[in-house]
Length: 265
Image 1 (cartoon, rainbow, N blue to C red):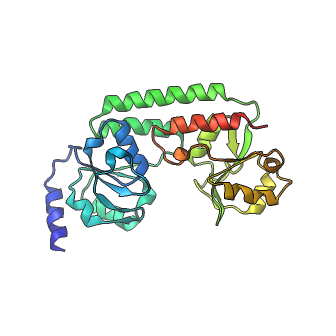
Image 2 (cartoon, helix red, strand yellow):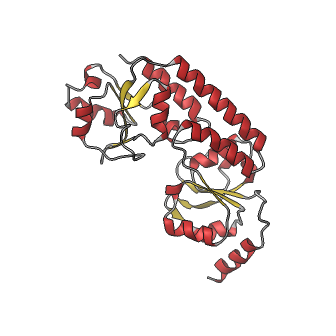
Image 3 (cartoon, rainbow, N blue to C red):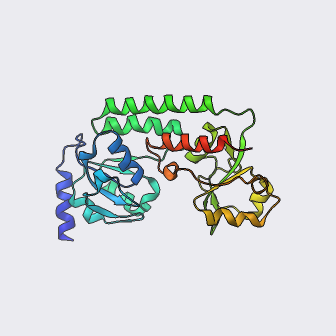
């Protein structure tokens, strides 16, 4: 408790506007800092998968959903990049009570993500880099949209998990990536980012393509031979799981998705 109090006193002594010691609480946000050529500003990360090589040496402040508050405070960050679901409400309130500046990021669309590059860039002294990334990302998306446009969107079921069955709703950035590729999630009408659905609901919506993270998940759908995706042999692995980490690399992942869907009948 004494150590925690000492850390808090140090925090209160920091200058308000400096953003030179950054802690990232999401892998995608860590990637964005690297993409902004600012990896040296990161002093700690919340672990949640494989790290970029440039961040392998950084201390951990916990794992997804399990923030080690004392470890974070000892790093004396002047900015914390936060994905809303990476920590619970109580710990988020703690961070706010300590007066640590937070930048909360959860892009619902690719356009939101482009703006996030500029916002984070400004907060960490990389405004020009952020604007350049935003422009390049927007231009890349426009080119993909023009190249892969369809008169009728391809109906796609994007399976996030199988037990229970989760997919992407209309407020999920992957749904926007599908749109860029001339496709649409068959559950785009659902407001939740990642709704749980039933097999019966998938059968009713009859997707033309099913995308999933593993071959085993895809093979399970062969039990329903009347599905359009099964009849057309369009049960495909997600071509690049970078789609599930919203950072600049998502542009290349979206291009791979478009290339895969372009072969759909």
